[in-house]
Amino acid sequence: MKNGIEPTVDRGLRLVSCAGTRDYDEKCVRELKEDLMQVLLASNSPNTPKNEINGLTQRDTNLTEDINSAAKFLSMTLSSEPVSILMEERLLSRLGSTLLGTKGEEDVLVPIIFDLRALGWTATGIVGGVAGRLSQGPTFPQLAEEDVEPVEVGFLSSAKAGSVIVQAKQLEKALRALETGMQEVRGRR
Image 1 (cartoon, one colour):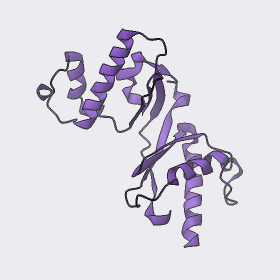
Image 2 (spheres, one colour; image 1 turned 180 degrees about the horizontal axis):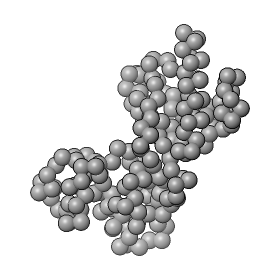
Image 3 (cartoon, one colour; image 1 turned 120 degrees about the vertical axis):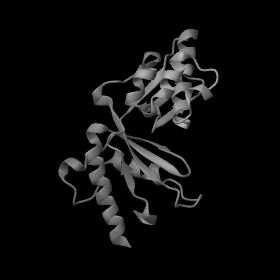
Image 4 (tube, helix red, strand yellow; image 1 turned 180 degrees about the vertical axis):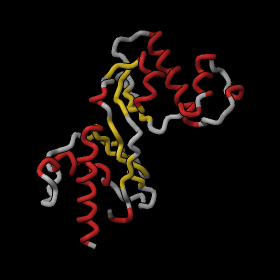
């Protein structure tokens, strides 16, 4: 792509989209907050010895003992609505009892990640543009007929990184479309 921005995919990174319950239950909300704090603590400092983390219960410290429990991908949206979470499927055992949402194999998502650190602050719309192009159905004549169908996507974007989120079952189709698009952009240089 332009400016050397290439998408990367960790095929082992499997995401699910969940939300907190709409029914206000103080115990459930407190559990979810505690569970989210565990995941965040483990993610921010996976090598911190458990005796250096103050205020955690035994249930909490069990999480910090597992170096693999650090989240590689966790996105939370907090608003007046129940919390919305896009997280790794493997973390469901830590948070699953306090969350609602699609948790079946057919709903697994995979992020296609774009490292945008090489771009200036004025570069905008890149990840949204890629997501939009995929969701409309790529229009490259060299793609196979099954690859021009739209891909269901979501996206998260910040100033220096972005992710196009696709269903695992559509990942290969999305990657073929991206590769074709990148070849087209390279050919215009």
